Image 1: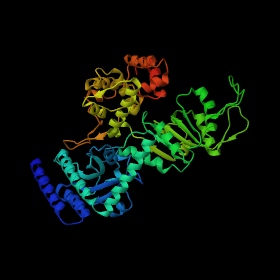
Image 2: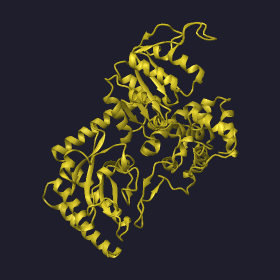
Image 3: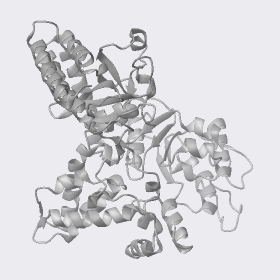
Image 4: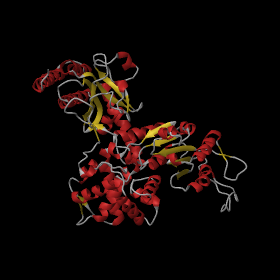
Length: 540
C-alpha cells in the first residue's frame, strides 16, 4: 500500500527529475513528453495530455501527450470544444476540475478517456490550467485509478506544479520560430477580436467571450441563420446587433422583436403584418417585422416563447421566402437574414412537443453559446468599471471604491448575469455615502441579490457543477462554483408566499411595467409572469 509519506517522497523525486529534464539540451517537445511520461510511470497519472486552443476550430486540441492511441490522436478524437466537458470548463474559468469516476460524471466527455487495466470504471480524471502571464493558455489533464489509498489533493498539487513547469517550457518555446508564430497569431487574433468587441460595445476579453465573437466573425459574410444560446442577461441583443453590423446587410434595416414581450393576441400581427379590416382595430394596412426587415436582419429574441401556430407560419416564411399578412390574399416576397435567441433548452422543448423540430433545424444552423458571467469572471472588473463610470456621469457623483469590492463582485454567482451586475452598480452609485463604495455596502446588496436570485425561474435547475478535489476516493465531489455557506452564494430556495413582496416591490418601482420589473429581477417576462401566477395560487 502507498502511504501518504511514500507518496510525498515519490512526488519530490518526480519533481526533481522533471527539473533535471528542463535543464537538458533536448528539444522542448521532448521535455514536455518526458514530464508526462514521469507522471505516468512514477505517479500512476496516466494518459497525460497538454491541450492548446485552436480558435479556428473553436476547440482545445491535443498538442503533447503520453500513452494516448495514435490513431485517435490523428483523428482528433481527444480534442474538446471550448464549451464542452470539464476540460473546456477549466480553460474557460482558469480553475482546476476533477472527477473520481468518469462514468458517474454527466458533463464529462467519456470519449476522451482511455481504460486503465482494460476498463473505464473506476477511472478518475484531473484537469488543471496552464497559465502564462496571468491567463489560461492551455490545459494539462491526466487519468488515475479511483481505487487507491492516496489522496486526490496530493495528485492535484503535483499536477499544478507540473503545469507550471510546462507553462515555463512553453514560454521558452517562444524563442523558437514555430511557437513564436503560433503565439503571434494567437495574440493578433485575440487583439482583433477585442477590437471588434470595443467597436460594438461588448466589454470583456476572456477567452470564452472571444470564442463567441470569433464564431460570429467567421459567419459575417453568410446569410445562415444564427441561434444565440445562453442565460438571460448575457447580452444576446448586443451580439445580434453586432452580427448585423458585421454582415453585408449592414446598410439594410435591423429589426428586433422580443417574442415574450408582446401579448399573444398581438404577436401574429406584429410579426406578419395585417390588412385593413382584417380584425377589429385594423384601421389600415400594417407591415409586420418580417417585411420591415427587407434587405436587412430580423432578430427574434426569446424564440422559445413563440406559439406553435406562429412557429408553423414562421417556418413557411423561411422556406418560401414569402409572408402573408393577417387578412391578406396574396403573399409578399421577403429577403432578410434571421437571428434568433433563447435562454431555454430548445432541444428539450422539441422533445416535449413545445417547439417544432423542423423549425429548430432551420434556426440552429449556427448556434453560438454566450457564456454566463460566472464563466468569464475576469471580465467582471471591466464591466463594473464601465457601469460605474456611466452612472457616476448620469447621477453626477464622484466616487472611489474600497479595496475588496471588485473581489466580492467577482466571487458572486450572478444568476442575472450582466443585467444584474449593472443594476447592482447603479444601486451602489445611488446609495454610496461619503463618496465611497464600501465592502459592507456591496455585501449587503449581494445578500439581497442572493435572495432575489431564488426567484429566478432558471435557478430551478441547479447551477453547473465544477468538480473539486476529493480527499477520499469515491464518487466525484461536484459543488457549485461558489461556497454554499457564504452569504453571497445562497443555494436555490423554492419561492414561498412571503416572497410575493419582492415581485410587488419590483412592480411598484417600475410603475406596474412587468417587462421592466422582470429585468430588475434578472428574469424574462415569461419567468416573471410564471412566478406571479404561481404566487397568486399559493406557495410553490
